[in-house]
Amino acid sequence: MDRVIVVGGGLAGIRSVEALRAKGYEGALTLVSAELHRPYDRPPLSKALLVGDIDDTTFDTDWAALRCEWLPGRRATGLRLDPGGGGIVATDGGDLPFDGLVIATGAAPITLPGTGPQRVLRTVEDARSLRAGLREGARVVIVGAGWIGAEVATAAARRGCAVTVVEAADTPLANAVGTLIGGRTARWYAEAGVELRTGVRVAAVEPGGLTLADGGRIDADEVVVGVGVRPVLGWLEGSGLRLDGGVVTDASLRASAPGVVAVGDCAAWWSRRYGRRLLVEHWDAALNGPDVAAAALLGADAVYEAVPYFWSEQFGRMVQYAGHHPAGERMIYRGDPDGPGWAACWLTGDRLEALLTVDRPRDLLQGRRIIATGTPVDADSVADPGIPLRDA
Ligand code: FAD
Image 1 (tube, rainbow, N blue to C red):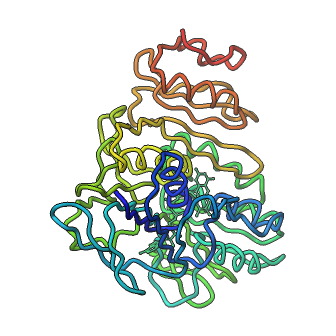
Image 2 (image 1 turned 30 degrees about the vertical axis):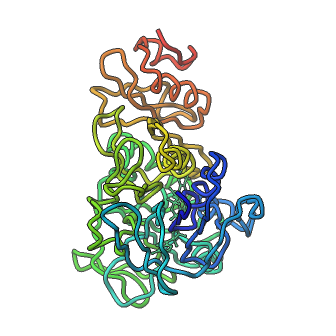
């Protein structure tokens, strides 16, 4: 292999470049990036950058050592695969032949119908521009009480805005962790002075606010839409590559054509641990998946067996999640969910499947390790926050 192209200059893309070089790949390496910035970190965009504590999240990358051609502002528009392996990435600046390809085009925010201005939060430009709109006293309406919605609400409230969060489900985080646990976070909004309106469907974003499915209206100076993301796959359509909500890969992150791997938010990978395909839009997967993808591309045996991990900083709390709770048969609380620090633990028999922690980072670390090893736990000890979380 002597010509590798990485498409997508986010975390998964730059980590793939680094991993290929770290594993001894010596051939030509090109990073095709639709954005103009050097690769940068996204989680701070809805946290420290949005409140104005920092302004730049560019990764500290040693470009000279990586010997990587960086093509900023270049968008992949199509993929032609050779039956024998390799092929051509078509871009808006010409064709790029390859014999190895890393697909790392991430995900893009879903927007709502309507003619009014709506903001999303994915890029550093989005974040800086939104920050400018979070003026003291501004009426900010956030659609979606998911992870991003909660973080934007946190920042907007801190900047003195009048914040309303509109959510179609009955509780925040309903899609992510279910209504029982999601409901536990509802009072955080009230305590921060944020109005939370659940069970409310938005029909359209109109100039000056939102119209609701029930005919109502909410006036707003700023509308921020945080209703989820979709993997960026348009440029792969018609290529013959298997797509199913994401780029379909095996447990080694190999896509359905030889010499092609996919990583990060756009990859729907086969999880041996859970016996099903997973698509997790989490920083940890974009950070660690590339090691496996690079190894697989270079012909080594490697399997991505990660326990999914995610964190969110909302309303002054650190919320962390590890595992895959739909696999759990029952949920038990560790500590008082109305208190300051607690956890929800999902178990099957004596096996810990997942946990969500609120301001209990040590529980998260220990729980994540227990989930990874699959060792049994004692449910009574798990329920007791005074006993360290450990295997039985
Ligand atoms: P991306 O970072 O989306 O990078 C993909 C890149 O590919 C982009 O630069 C895009 O422009 C480019 N691209 C797309 N199409 C093309 C094309 N056709 N040609 C060329 N380039 C293309 N995760 C957590 O675990 N915890 C958090 O607290 C957290 N907070 C977040 C806050 C925000 C505001 C956002 C947006 C995300 C957050 N995440 C968080 C998620 C995490 O940042 C993502 O999972 C991670 O960035 C995914 O990296 P990626 O490289 O797969 O995709």
